[in-house]
Image (cartoon, rainbow, N blue to C red; front, side, top):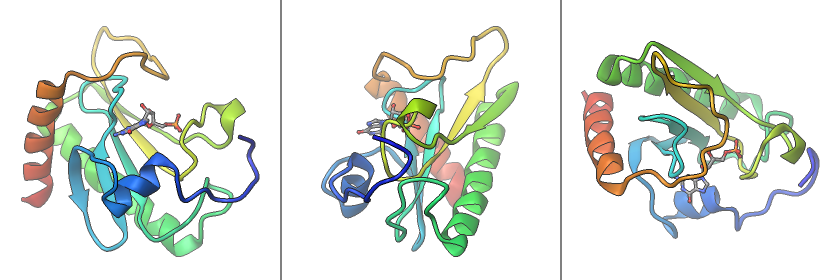
Length: 145
Ligand code: 5GP
């Protein structure tokens, strides 16, 4: 997939939005959805996506959706910081396959970084389901509070 092209409504994040695929949901409102990455680069790795914009990347999203997405990313990052107390938080966003994008529905990564751990970009392993569930409960509760 290149940087340019048509939006494919069959991508996995579009399916998650429509409820056709499951996710470990952290937060949702009319405009955005946040959930845990299934292949986390670190404990608490979350993704935030727009629900109404059929946008592949930063180049084609409308300004209103981008604004809401940025604010939601800050909201989830704050919850991650408070709940998991990482040493740092990486916010990442990839545009086009050569830049590392694998799912072509725009998303922001929120990757908590802990002392002594590396800066991996793509994890090869699926997260432990029991731990993802624990993290979902903790972070969703924090975001609801
Ligand atoms: P990208 O490389 O496009 O910036 O990031 C896509 C992210 O989506 C990756 O970190 C990958 O682990 C994650 N991912 C891929 N498929 C699924 C899925 O079915 N569910 C969830 N929660 N995350 C996924």
